[in-house]
Length: 536
Image (cartoon, rainbow, N blue to C red; front, top):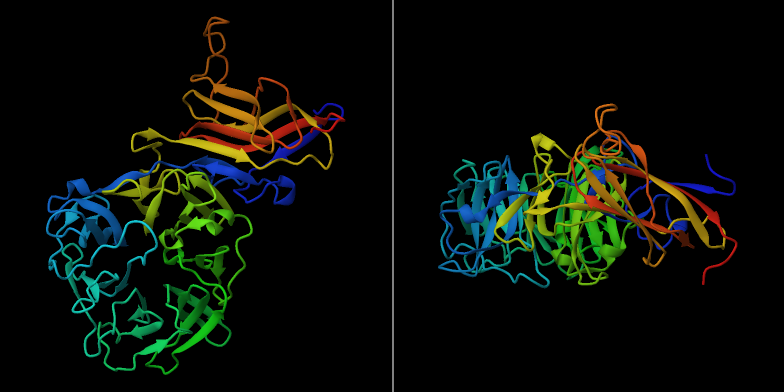
């Protein structure tokens, strides 16, 4: 029970928000949920993000043509990853070289047809760029890359008639050729749509040919198209029809219909909102999600462009080099990695948005420059771990994996930081009388550290919760020598024993600890009293 004049607060963590005050945002706003992800069984409860593991290690590639640099594009089909990787030494130095690998075994496959002339020149690894893109049309995996020479070679193709023995080639569309090297490609209505600046060219059905010279149309003004994405569109007259979104920096256009049915048309959805971050444009069950200059937006199946996500926008508004931001969607999770220019040292930060819970977590501690779905989870290309592609798990225990918490030899640790908590409208200093946190702790002994902070992040007090490694059985140990208490499997309120009095105007609570299977973190319960004087 509470004591006289004690004010009880229950803080239920409900995701990461942009806010300087818990009073001015949704209840349960957190500043940080690092390497914590939602428990799929319980709202306002979080578990530890599993460690990423190596899926593909290029050091095992026996037929590598030289020293391997960064992977610049990849596409996963039925467990096989096809892509291009930069080569820094040897005959193919300065080129992006085709590869194929079984993601489950890590075994590289032989790609035939590669020559020094039919592979693209690598782009710079820093600064603004036009990301390569791959799209699958039947057995042809088309690769758009601005590094092709534009004379004989305009785009690349993996022929995956036999998926384990792909054949590489490059060239141009037959009959009528593309006028320049395309910057993007996307399959729509069994045709491949190519982008050449502000003009869209489309091939014949299931072919890389253009039988007619007029198989093209212009999107808007002279500014270039930056991205393509498919979008099913709900209509009142025709039900669900397929659409193709064409993004520019400041606009979005929806392409519908087909030349065969004489109803090919363009529809301007937004004259002022677009994107330069082509790799953040991702189809999801709620529509196509993308990063605009003002945050994360969604284009619904009705073709409506949403307002920016109201919970978290600052990292995306301050993203350095938006063209290098990347995102992907799988297993109810939209994840996006950006370089945050508003944070000291401008780190790359990985944020996850869970559709079921409608909340953000992060920033997580693994940076990457490319992501794609793989089974229930993801494959990641790291920015600072060249030569590997990683498995990344969004739920603990997927397919028997996703239960480890050591990443590249480094143990993971979680970090939870609340936003400044309410003062219940009083103007006075407050004294924290007691506090508990609901946790389920793993079977092994662990220690969890907590810090009470003021609104500026200054430490006011510290506390440590130590969990006994093993339960002692009553009567089976010598009193005073054994450990009394045990680990828990359900959410249990644990007292945070502060080392000194906590006096505050606004309060933040920071919790940290080693990541582990079985750990769950949920609500904080706080009791405090107004002190009838004003701080500062």
